[in-house]
Length: 314
Image (cartoon, rainbow, N blue to C red; front, side):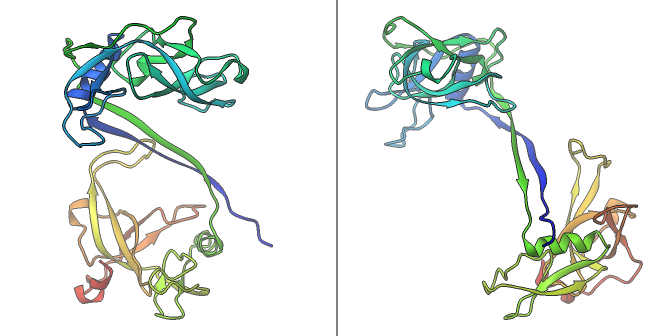
């Protein structure tokens, strides 16, 4: 039996969003060691606050300050913290209903072990030494022996230099193991060949192969070598440099219909100024030494393909 291919993959990007008046007040309040909720039409206090009532969908604007102490409503122990989590040592994920609030806030609880955590225990916020207007301004929760603290009080949510936007890094680490069809495809690429699979029903050739026809829903097994040349069907010009990618901008990424394939794959176009790339351009792969896949595609010098030859693959 051949070895099963497997490789670690990371999907990472910064997610940038602007804040409305409610979220802006909430995050700016955290920077000032103040926790704000929002009052709904029926008088409930939601923490974290939302801009619209989850029941009536009415717009919510009445901000209310709640306490920095609260009660654990449920919890789960995390014995092996991952990169980017609130604490570097084992901790509990907890839902905490802060005094004065009617909903619970998810965060970390610093505790010596799971035996020290229980539903109903009293906790308080441990503020981060340096605060910037983010949920991380709450470093974590910690056990607290006191009782409930005060009643919620109205707060206009007006602070100097309010936070108006946030950047949240999104990251997904996982290990990918391709199936039979893609393993064969990757193996052929290492030999500088491109193979797809033909559907026994509609006879379309799919590259990269998926092991089944997405149209007919039947398994595919017949391998078909395609290309290596192909035609640019559509493309985009990239003007933002990607992290850890040593390619100068601007450059072009295109969908390329390889000769003999019925599905376009995407790849970078090189060997031509970005503003000269066009639909119908005939291209061929460029392999680097010891490369396991084409580095990019370049023009072949052939006349452009007629639109009717690739219009079904747009």
